[in-house]
Length: 189
Image (cartoon, rainbow, N blue to C red; front, side, top):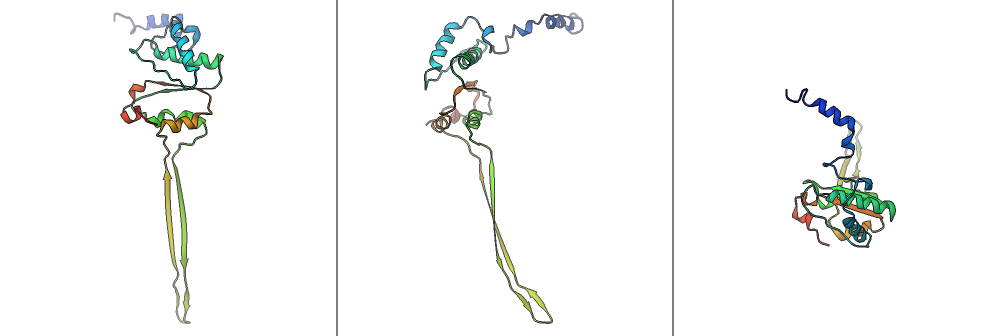
């Protein structure tokens, strides 16, 4: 074999050097100490994020550092300027508008779980006939069951904004282009 034992010798040297703790090209940077060269972009993000009602859209080719820039900036803001929650949602093809906001809504006290309630109503009456040599029970019983279910899903940006208005923090939605349904990508008020 050209690499010896499947390259295990080289891999052992790499592990001992701990280079993969510093050089992580396939994992977004999320610590300010590892984030260099994007200070101007980060400064603009801080300015916009810190302005009430403002939103940011970062776009570009894969692997250029959009997620690293967003995560690092958000964490710095929450550590140094304001306090609050950091919600990060990395979207995939199974996500919907509702699934994107599940965690912050639950943090706000909104229960989005499936609920089922069953009501039972018993009604009846009866009579007993006893003729000495024979006895008969003529009672009847009627039971009605009603099942109601609710699977609450947020479907409006304005409703979500109203529910989250008292929650302090920043939400990072990553890979939003992976969402499949156009109706979820383009929600109206």
